[in-house]
Length: 189
Image (cartoon, rainbow, N blue to C red):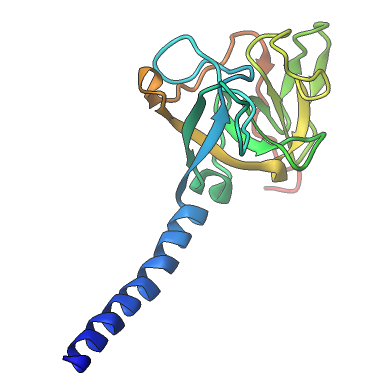
């Protein structure tokens, strides 16, 4: 009886030893779930007129948290697109995670929402902003170029609450971005 119980315990330990690294790899490299605090401003994502807000590890008391599915392949392949909702470290506070709409990519010219100035997005950066000014997003985080290295994932789906479950739409406002064209290499024949 002693040997049978021991063999069963070793099999379970072996299963855990093989399963945990696979789970960690999937969570870190392919897809994971994050919490976005519903009390913060949100962008229009999913199936209805709602917004995605500041991600928080613990929501404020009395608020419901939104769970979102993060696509972690996109940053590894640098396949972000204009209109994506992205999950990133806050440029002003590295301890906070936020979700924002990616408006323009490096080399694009973007019209600022606040003052209609046209700005070129520098190399290695992208332009992020919330959907509407005055939504409670800190002014230094709304409508600015941030390094691409801060982008951690693309928000692909809303998982919770049930009324908002669905895929995140890629949305761009017309007339805001003059997209870069492919540059011609002068040394090419």
